[in-house]
Image (tube, rainbow, N blue to C red; front, side, top):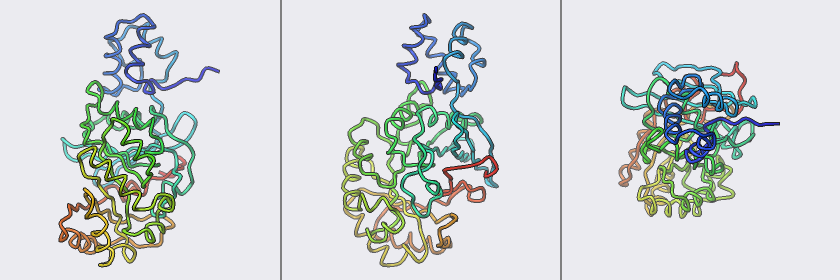
Amino acid sequence: MNVRHSISELSFDELHTKLEQWGHSRYRAGQLIGWLYKHNAVSFDLMSNLPKQLIAQLSEEYDCCSLSVVKTITSGEGTVKYLFQTVDGQYIEGVSMPDGDLRHTVCISTQIGCPWGCLFCASGKHGFVRNLSVGEIVDQVRLMSSNQPISNIVIMGGGEPLMNFKQLEAAYRIFTDDAAYAIGKRRVSVSTAGYVPGIEQLIRSDIRPQLAVSLHAPTDDKRSQVLPINHKYPINKLMETCKKYAQLSRRPVSFEYIVIPGFNNGDDDARALVKLLKKYPAKINLIPLNPVEGFSYRCPTEEEVYEFQSMLLSAGFVVTIRWSKGQDIGAACGQLRSAQSQSDL
């Protein structure tokens, strides 16, 4: 059986080689890349300046896109959540967050489900299904950038990106290539639950995205209660690995900290967090807890978030607050789901 792949599975070198094997001039690959990533064409028939013979060859061997948009839903502030279906009938979600005419951030997934099962995150509630292919990662961006060019990409959707490193790396090269999206390397952020072997792979590679680490508690005892990954990769090991990446990339690591009232936002928590992070190049990104089915803690008030921020600012840290967009449509941090039916969105 001949298995068809999406054209976006191919690297640019592979595209050049394939078209040369078919007898086409080298510049045709540049035209094809422009249609795929500058114009985000999802049908070969739209590529009007390519020869009919090449269109026929492409159509016979490849799909133009690995995903289809099943449904979209738009929040009151303009955030759009996408439900995508893969060719094997699985579902993933992505989020488009426009902010005026100049900034457009998309949040994309790298796995179907997630193996870690963090208690405050819906993505792992149904377990882990499989890694996404590079085409499935890239095609989320293609499908969400049809109305407005992309300025920032956050790889913080469903799954643990650093457990799908090979595909993540290939997608990153497309995102940052001038022939494709030309996204600045500092405008691509990769989030990890603290998968130390993946950070070590990042250190050995030559890609340098902004690294965001889900910390969420300042001690192993508390962190292990909400992030099962901490049992395998405890805080000290995680922090030392992050320090190496920060030194190599010459940028501080962003530590994500979901504010959970009555669990991790007390005075003792603030002091412990300051003691932990003062030895490392770090930024702190506070995220108010969003409602997730099955997690019993309530969401914090604005006053509680600002109070915790104030304690950290007084210690000299750079501390931002990520007020989540799309909470009303289940598109905020921690709310993207791993297994969907078309009626779930």
